[in-house]
Amino acid sequence: MMMGTFPPTSDKWAMRFHYPNFYNDMWRIYGRVFFDDADHFRVGNEKHFDPERIRAFLCERGIALCPSVKQAIRETGNASDKHLTVVTPVDLPTILPQVPNVTTLFTTGGKATETLIGLLDDPIPKSKYPKTNQSIAFPYHTPSIERQMTLYRLPSTSRAYPLALDQKVAAYKAFFEKMGKL
Image 1 (cartoon, rainbow, N blue to C red):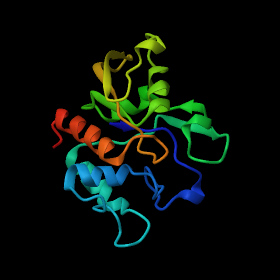
Image 2 (cartoon, helix red, strand yellow):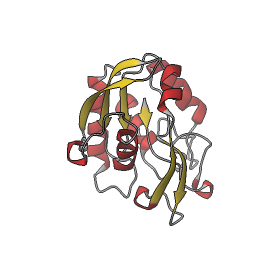
Image 3 (cartoon, rainbow, N blue to C red):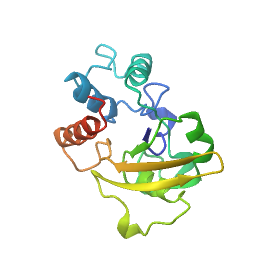
Image 4 (tube, helix red, strand yellow):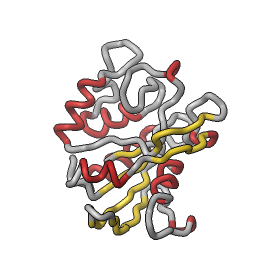
């Protein structure tokens, strides 16, 4: 299950779906990883992606999406997680029973990783947080769930993140190969 943080302000949305900003590279990365085509999910020459085609693809591949943040405040009005204050994180005890086969979570940057780790029963020191392209294993317990989970931290797909698109594509491709999705 892919877990990002929080969408940008609605004036930046090009579609009503995860990663709605046309200038975020998430769906270009997925297009390159799975179809060798950055514009695979793009609608012609328009500046938006096709959420129905994305949904169908994700269902076919068994990739779930969920934000790590349910409610947040964007301090500066832009999409930067640096100025994002988390008010309410996602409720994992409610979400995980809905996806009983999920044992791997992957985040798309540091803020999502920090938010999820903050939800764990057994605190992990910040020095042990996974760095980009690394993972940690952790037990997840609730009265109804007992699972061994893995959390991978992948690079942010924001163009503001200082990593070339080819390197982001390579990181996501290596992850999806490891997960058996390619």
